[in-house]
Length: 229
Image 1: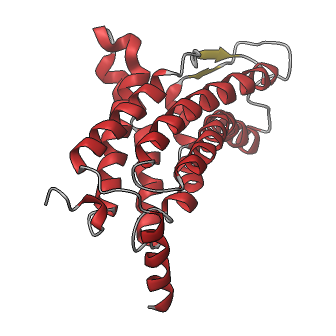
Image 2: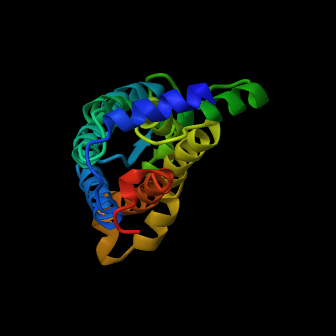
């Protein structure tokens, strides 16, 4: 109880204003959408060797860092109305997205490589010289690293919301992870439609709506969002 009381006192000390819940939700979703729109690098590849996978790592990392930077800055501007921790949010989001994208690529490659090696005793892909075997990579593979986003953001988020706990930490991690896993549905929904070229911002809308709603839920017991209730 004393630890919880001390946290809430520290939380109150970092509160700046009492923003409108709806306006906060709207701005958060907009910032997240713009952030995902910044992912301009093509993640669709047909890799035939492990050397190609290695060459793709900087591309996936760069795309993740770009999204994380733009998204982190946008969300930090929203959080500026809530807390003094907003600019620390930029750094953890920047790093989290970069590592999430790169991890997604690595795990996607490692899973079939390990299974085929253990079962058949051969390598899944040749090291340098292409063969008839290849692996198709796309944004769906980001799922495997998506959990890192919430993990990196939580240490800052827990200083912003009242009464943080493991249940809220798990929910935040799973929410971000779920959206990256939902990319397969986004691709299916936008396939051969006018939205086919806007899959990244569509992901941003989904991410913003879900995480923004959870953020407001976390803040619902706080004076931060009671001005319209």
